[in-house]
Amino acid sequence: MAPAKTAAKKNLKRAADSDGFQIPPKHLTVKAEISTKLKRRLSVLEKPKLDESAKNYVENINAPRKFKLPELELKQFKGNIKDWLQRWGQFKKIDEDLEIADDDKLQHLIQSATKNSPARHLDESFPPSGKNYVEVILCFKDRFGREDLLIEVYIRELLALVINNSNPQGQKYSLVKLYDTLEGQLRSLKSLDVAKDNFFAILLYSLIE
Image 1 (cartoon, rainbow, N blue to C red):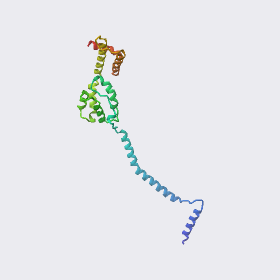
Image 2: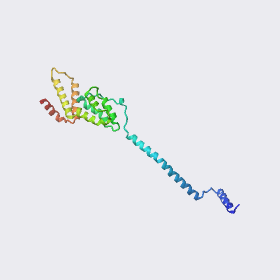
Image 3: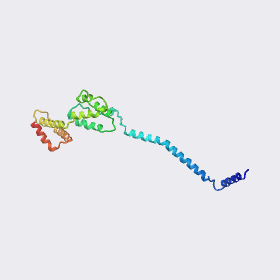
Image 4: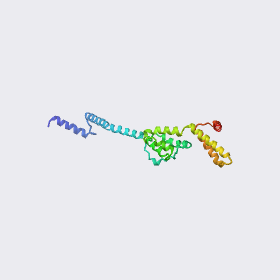
């Protein structure tokens, strides 16, 4: 056996018999380089998966929610102007919900309109597509939700109530019912931003008219 090989074996045996076997620094450097390259390669392979997951997560958050229409019950609307405030107060929550698709909003609007009523006829005058939803709402507000008409209607209701109750031959209301009815009309006017100071002026004008 060559002297060089014999010396190498003796050195390895001597190292193994010592406190612990020490890997040469050169081998450690090679191992570290290989480990680093593997980590980089794995990170490159995994990154597209992470990016795709993040993209799907964002899309799911921003996607419009799909509602089962029967679960959300709205009061039927015939097209009576007196019922508009209650109607819009209920439907406004749906209208302002950005997570509900316009197609679903339009279906809610159609289903909550009484069949063969002016409101239903207005709904059905538009093609049943979410693209028409905004225009349908604008038409509804213009026909049933005009503030000047609503104020006139509630003022006339107040006058009719007072005149009828003071008429000996008119229908009489109990004090509690009369109070509740008056308060309801006044609250409706208040929701239309009619100040209490203007009530008497409007009533007087209506009487003269």
